[in-house]
Image (cartoon, rainbow, N blue to C red; front, side, top):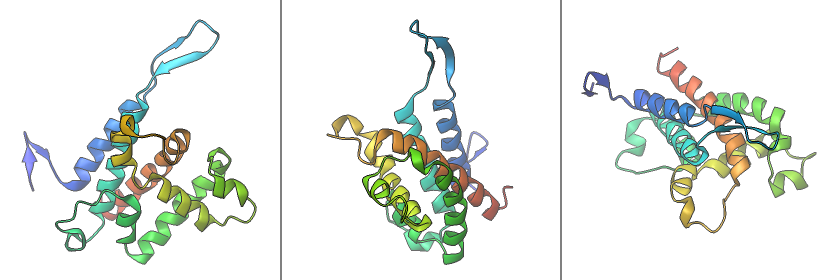
Length: 177
């Protein structure tokens, strides 16, 4: 196993480091009143999105046969998700949908809003996965974009649901829990 200064450099360990970076970005440090009656705190949302999306990418890659993605620089989460075994996809979708359904009123998406009553769990999952699929590359260069793609608040709400569930699942699969 490759190490740097005595620390493991396995893909699951690197995913954990980016997960920790995500958490540090959203810690809510320096909580204070802004003078207008609102409590505020310091967070760094764009770096949180980038670190969280990259952590998801690495967790997914830790569960995929390396031969399937060898020599491919894939950052697209939906594409990586497609390489998982059917049983893994089903289990992850079940776990993630449970949480998405509790919060889907917060997801501002025209397709979901128009079909709220007829949208299935699979629709919600697919729309959200597609929405965050390019988050790593997209949000790293958000200053060059004309819009926020899936949406800033959508990404802030949906990404942690995928991150937490994929992290736990990958760690279970890799014998870390």
